[in-house]
Image (cartoon, rainbow, N blue to C red; front, side, top):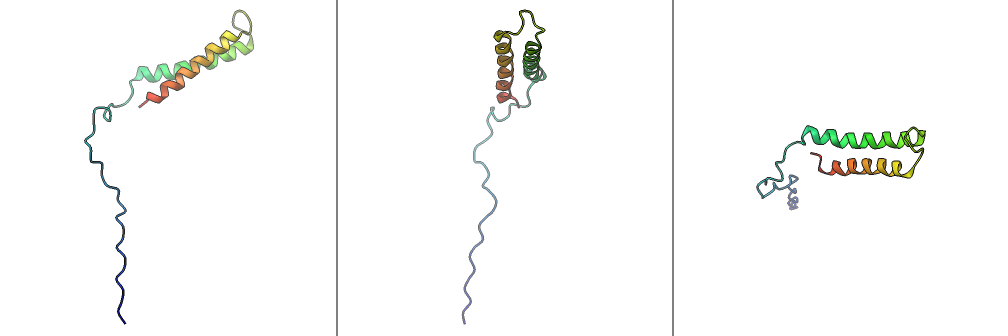
Length: 84
């Protein structure tokens, strides 16, 4: 009785990229000052919000302090998008 040929196995390796790396691919790590500002804004935002709820800031608890803290945290998190 004749024996059937088996199926060919698929190549499991992905094909390498055909484009050369551009300058955007080779940016390198983020500078130290960028990381310090990013985490600093988030930390200052949290501190402002905590001090607002404790009533330590001048004027008592005010929405302007809450908004300022949230904006600082938001800008810090937005900066993480460009972190390398």
